[in-house]
Image (tube, rainbow, N blue to C red):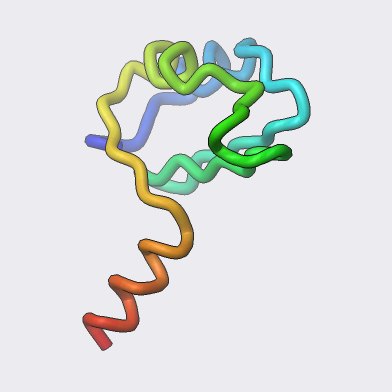
Length: 72
């Protein structure tokens, strides 16, 4: 995300329905675990990011792992 969200923004985001999906913010990173895959999410990322008040880009774990390997 462009910055770490405030505690008030995190509280607002916690109200977003997630179904079986789970999310956590670590610093400026939003980690999402999609219970049935990213193609069939229960959580609305638009609603989540709007409540967090952040702009963000997304990368899946496979892409992040490949980038780290290339940088190593």
